[in-house]
Image (tube, rainbow, N blue to C red; front, side, top):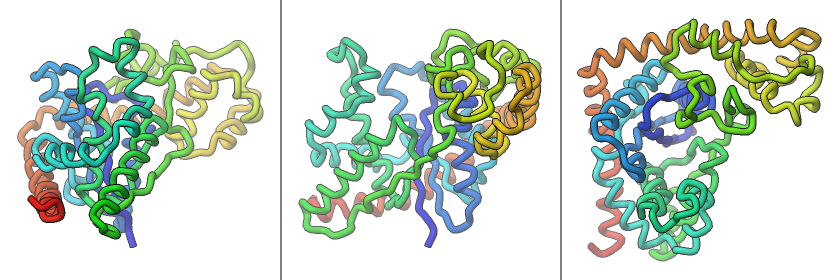
Length: 333
């Protein structure tokens, strides 16, 4: 029996190599397995936990859909939709917030990191974000959810909410308790300028990341300037433990080539970094430039992107509305 997979991506614009290797590449692989039923959501309600310029948000939604399709997700085989167009998400989030406990949410480390020192000024939405995430997942009877390190805790909360609802109303399996799909290798891609910082669009230096819209020359230049260390190429994985920049670059090459880290190390052991960087640039160019070209092409076809979302929203709405009706009956509404 195949998996029913749900995953969401925030439409915050300027998706980069870290997003591709950490999530989208895996989405494509999962969606190509004909046994899986995949639902990919552009989580625009999650995006507004911090202020978004309305025009930018609209453009970023389109760019996220274009990136999904350009990367290889077929909208005829998978459901692609934006969260705000299926009202069941907002309604289920309120209902589940009455099931979730304050103590559970207080343990969420991501809120503490994102809110910073002045938590009093953070939005309630940023605090209750994981409850909306639980609603997203549980409405579709999802059996599996691809998660990175930063979302594992949120999925645990989702599982707790599902189990508490089932127990409170003496239901065995009304809400499916989803399993994580954890990408163990290369799930965290780091900055090209600092191997201890995650690659991020919010970094002030564009040289810190490879954007999915970068051209060939930009990619080659960024890899040429990527931080390394004066030591020779490593001959074993153990050598990389304190060589964060080298480990990151070797990880990027391995992921794009579908190699293990050991295989990449064996290939380049004894060679110099300049030779490795040339090969790395070529691998990134071969994979990312076609995606970049396709994204730009799709962004000129807004009508087609709107059609994808319209079709996806219809399919998602049909599934989610049925679940909400059952929830109403259970609650006594």
